[in-house]
Image (cartoon, rainbow, N blue to C red):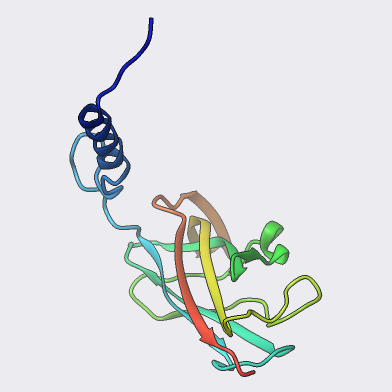
Amino acid sequence: MRLRLSISRLTGLIAAVLTLALVPSSFAQDGEAVPAPTLSIEQVIVEPSNPGADTLCRLRVKLGNQGTQTASQLAFKVALNGQDLGVYGNQLFMFPVEPGVDNELKLYNFWTTETSRSMPKDGKLKVEVTLTEARWMKIADDEEGVEVWSPLEDVEGLPVSKSVTLEMKK
């Protein structure tokens, strides 16, 4: 038995597959909109903003918390032109991300070029930061006045990413 598809049927099949693949992921299966993540990366800050080869850069992120609780135990992934920086693979940042305020967090410094990462041919360095996980926390003083951090539950809606592309000096 041979399967024969006409050009019009094949085109229709391809269009149907592409339509399903391109349906926005912001909608749940039942058609309801998925709420925006409660934690967000508002800005990626790299200094200097126009680095050259072999330049040490400082990396910071501004985090937004649209929730009502403090978040912490933050796990990040950082990539330079798509290449992951391995130092983030087993690190958690115990920084309190308070709701409704500016939360700026210093991440690890990085070199623009290394043995395994040469100068980009196009002179552009894309720095992408992803918040992969976080926990809601209860932070309170105990009866002796000692601050105690208690994890409550995972923050939903993660991962979230933000990137910045730097023009490098030649």
